[in-house]
Length: 53
Image (cartoon, rainbow, N blue to C red):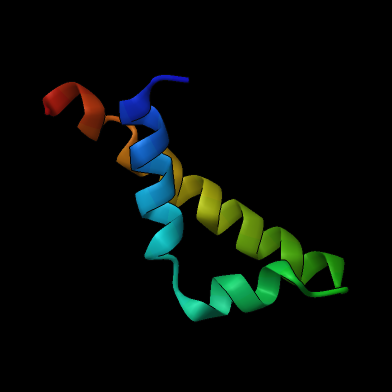
């Protein structure tokens, strides 16, 4: 993983909303899955920005 990719993913995680952080710890599968999918979408959305930089 190159430094730009790592920095992009780290930045997305750093600005993840509190509800995502909370829900990632949930014991309820549906809640945790929603948070995982949302975070994955945020990361995927940020990745094309690497090419524009």
